[in-house]
Length: 175
Image 1 (cartoon, rainbow, N blue to C red):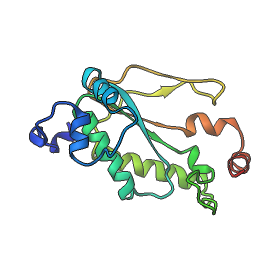
Image 2 (cartoon, rainbow, N blue to C red; image 1 turned 90 degrees about the vertical axis):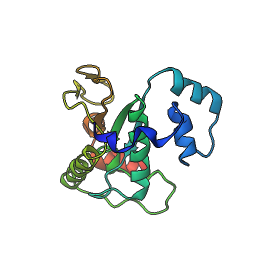
Image 3 (cartoon, one colour; image 1 turned 45 degrees about the vertical axis):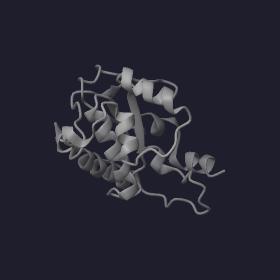
């Protein structure tokens, strides 16, 4: 397993919520006890999204990767959502300047570079695929359930790019 470099002795806690809190990854939560109870009683599938605005990760991205590593170590299933579709539109973070428009080829290259970096830290089910999707109005499905203890990765370009032209999405999302 790729996450074996987090030692089993990293914490005395057996619930990943407690471990993440102890390590400083959780400052506050809406309903801490319910979240803690859920993560202690069930194995959940969760996602974290990454827009490929460059061909490498920055520290903010890496913090999320570390959280996914801990969650996976404690038996949960990470879904790495690579934003090949959302990376084509404006920045939703409240910035006043638009995100620089990149070509589809640049975005795809950045997505491949992200996945290559994720592969170094997260253990993926390489047989899992999101298939059959032809846009947001024709949802796809997974070809199989992820193998126990494995993560999955999906690129939202698969369902966002077929919906309309990139310039239309950029215009709409910048309003």
